[in-house]
Image (cartoon, rainbow, N blue to C red; front, side, top):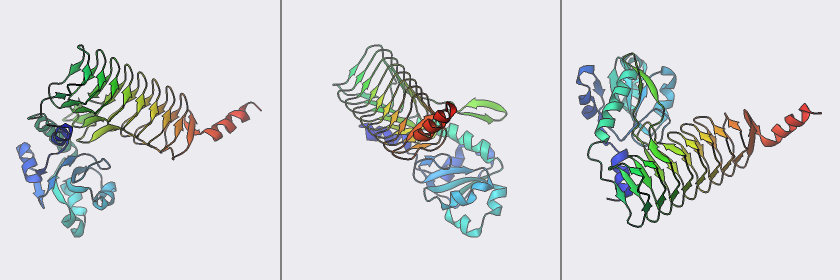
Length: 315
C-alpha cells in the first residue's frame, strides 16, 4: 500500500446519511433526500461532497451556493424556513440540536477512521534514528528521508522523498479545538492528516498539527522550516517558502509559494499570504497579505507604510 492509498483511507468516508445516523440511534435524526458525503467539516473547509452543519441562518445562502457541499446537518426550525428549491438541492439530517449532534458524529467518525488503517510503511532507504516514535499505523516515510533523534511521527503523517526532519520535531499531533458538549468542555480529536512533500527541511523542536476534520495540513515541496516553529491545524504552505525560527502559524492559514516569514512572526488564523510575500521579523499578521508585498509591525501593515509612520514619530 502506497502513500496515496493511506491518504485515501485517512480522508475518505464515502458514506450515506442513512448509514451515518445509525451511529446515534437515540437522537431521533431524520434524513431528507438521502445522499452521500466523503468530507465532514465546517463550511469553508477543503474537500468535495461535504457534510457540514448549519448552526445559524446567517449562513444559509453561502452554504446553498457552495457546490462542494452535498449534505447539511440542520435544525428543524431552519429547515422549515428555507425555500422549496433549496430543499431540493441538498441532502439533510434534521435534528433539534445540530451543534451537539455535529460533534457527537465527529467523535463517531473518529472511531471509524481509526479502524482498519494500513500499517506504517518506512522506505528501506529512509534513515530513522532509533529514538524516534512512529505510530504503527497510518504513517509513510519516503525514500532518502532522514528523521533525527527524539522525533514523534503520529498517525496520518505522510513524509515524502528527500526530507530532513531534525531532532525533537512532532508531526501529526492534534491541535487545540475545545467544544462544549453536554455541558462538558472537551478537546475534540482530530480526523485529518499531515503531508510533508519532497525536499522539505524541518528543524529542531518544530510542531505541525493535523486538521480537526478529514482534510490535510500540507507542506509543499522544498519548504524550509526553522527551529521551534508552531504550525497549527489545516495550514497549507506553498513551494519554496521559508519560515524562520520561533514563528507561529495559526489554524487554516494558506501561505503561497516563495514566501518568507521572519523570526518570531505570527500569522493569525484563517488568513492568506500571497505568493512571493515577506513578513518581517517579529510581525503579527491579522489581515490577508497580497502577493508580492512586505508586511511589518504589530499589528502588521505594508512595510513602506510602517517605515513612514515610524519616521514621523521621530521628526
